Length: 107
Image (cartoon, rainbow, N blue to C red; front, side):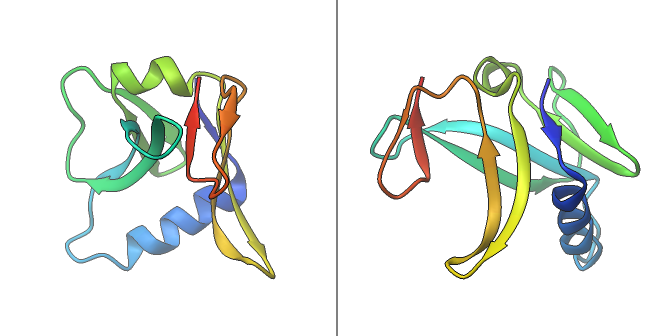
């Protein structure tokens, strides 16, 4: 299971509500690439795929494909604001190492 903090849910809903037309939900996935082998991807979707797992956080729907679920099980997504910048942060217990830029990982 993947979880989103209340802060992350609020920020996603804020961005989602500004979209026209409004997408149905948010897709979170793991894609190949980056200096460590994998990276996270977040994008709005108009409909879930046939084999997607759908999570609901109030009115927010989050779609995760089966392949990504292997790497995201137990992960938590948060939204952080700091002096260095703001953005979504993945806390994933399956990650063995990350790169210096913090946007890719290996398992």
